[in-house]
Amino acid sequence: MNKHWIMVLFAAMLEVVWVTGLKHSNTWYEWVGTALIIVICFTVFLRASKALPLGTVYAVFTGLGTAGTVVAEMTLFGEPFSMGKVLLIGLLLAGVIGLKAITQPKEAEA
Image 1 (tube, rainbow, N blue to C red):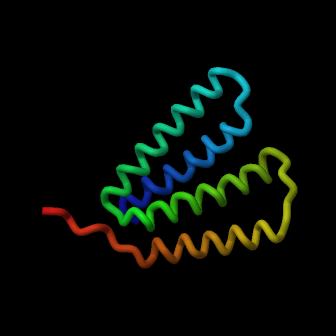
Image 2 (cartoon, one colour):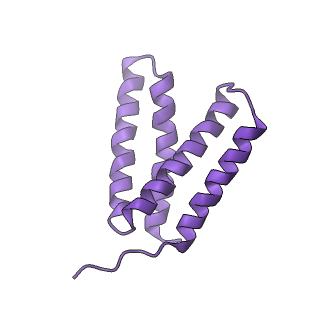
């Protein structure tokens, strides 16, 4: 795994944090923290997308972020567990892994 895919993974983890922050922030400093995480998240995402195909990076980023957010809500915030959710997250992750597996980095531009 190269550093750009690690950046995508990190950005997806940050996405889980800021999406959760949007739902659960109540004070001004929680909102400021959420906004800061959004800026960092998209900065990392954009840097990774310069070396990898944008469509694939976006699909992996949003897929992992979505799966992570659903899991975080179920484990940390009491969202009802559903086997259907787990199966659909598995399907989503299978697609994300497949996209990552068949995607090559962009050629260096001259």
